Length: 364
Length: 147
Image (tube, rainbow over all chains, first blue to last red; front, side, top):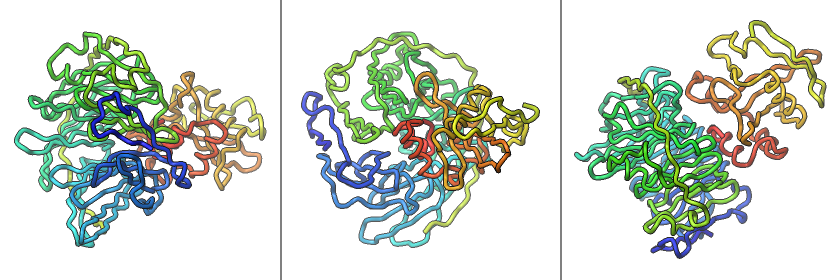
C-alpha cells in the first residue's frame, strides 16, 4: 500500500511502496497520477491500468486499456478525457456523459495534455501527434506535425506556459538535440533545434520560475545536464556533468527547484540546482549537494510535485520530496548527501530552424 | 570487414559456426543494421554463444543475445543504440550470422524502428529467466527504451 499523508512533511510516512501481488500477471512498468482525482495510476507491460486512491486502495477493477496489449508508457488527462499511449497505439476516452473512444494506430513514446486542451504524443520519427478531442464525435482527425523525414525524432515533449498565456513546447530529440516551438494548436510555427556532436537528449523537464517561465532542464543519455532559461530562444544553454553520475540516464524530473536524475544505476537528487541556476549562480563552478540513492528503477514520475514515484522491478515506491529540509527526507537521511563538483562542458552548439509540415490522419 | 569472416571457434553448446558478415559491419546499405565498432569480434561471438548456450530462441528458432559491460549494464551492440542482437536460424551446415536489432534510437531508418522487429515477449522472458537481463532491463527494452 502506498498511503500518502495529505500533510506530509517528511517526518510522517516519507517512503512508501505499492505492490501488485494480488493482481495476476500485473507487471508494472509505469506510474503516475490518477487522471481525474487524487490518487495513482499504474500501467502494466500487457497494457492494463490500475487506478487507486492515495492510500493505494484500488478504485474499481484493473482495466485493459491497450487493445494490442502493449506496455503502457503514458497516461494524460484533460477535463473528461484520458489518453493512454503505448508503442502500438494512442487511445482517447471520454468518460463524461457523451462517452467516446478514439484510437490511433501509431506507436508513441508517451502522451501529455496541455492546459489548452490538446493531447500531444511524440511519435519518434513520425512526428508529433496533436488532438483536441470533441466529445460525441466518433471520427476525428489528428494532426501530425513533422519536419522532413529524418530531421527530428520526437522522443519526449513538455508544455511550458509563456507570460502571455501562450504555450511553448520543448522536446527531447535524441541525437538531434533539444527542440522548442511555439504552439497555438492549428497554426504552424518553426521548430528550433540545438545540438552538438555526440549529444543524445533523452528527457526534458520544465524548471519554470516567474522570471523564467520557459526555463527547462534536459539530460543526455550519458548524464550530461543542459540548463536553459528560455527553451525557445537560448541557443547556448549551460551544459555540465557530474562525473560521479553513473549509468545510462532514464529520466530527469524537477520540483521545487530541485532536479531528480534517474539512471540505470541510481537516483540522483540534486538539491536546489535548478533554483540556483535560475538565480544566476555559477552552478558549473561550485559544488552542489547531491544525494545518491542506488536503485534499479524502470521509470519515474512526479505526483503533485510532492512525491517522486519510482517504478521498481516489482513495485512502485513513493518518496516524499515536498516542503522541508532536504536532509530530513527519509530517502536522503538514509544516505549521505555528497558535495559534488560539476564539470562545465564547452561545446560548439549548432542550431537549425525547421519548418514542420502538418498532415491529418483519421482517428476513430 | 570488407568480406565475410569466420570466427575461429564454435559455440560451446551446439557447435554452431559463426560468420561476421560484411553486410552488418559497414559493407551493406545505410538501412542495414550494423554492429558497433566498439564491439570486438570476440564480443560479438560471445553474444551468439550465450544466446545458443541458453537457447534464447523464438518460435522460428532464431536466437537472441545481449552483452553486459563491466558496470553490470547492457552494452550498445549496434550503431543505432541496439542492445539486443538477432541471429536468424541457419540451415544445416551453413554458418550463423547476426545483427543488432532492438531497441533503436533516432539514427535508425523508420523501417528499422517498427515494433514488428521487436523480439517476442517470450524471448525477453527467457533472457530474464536465465539472468542475461534483469527484470528492470526486460521492462525497459520491451517498451522500446534503452536499458
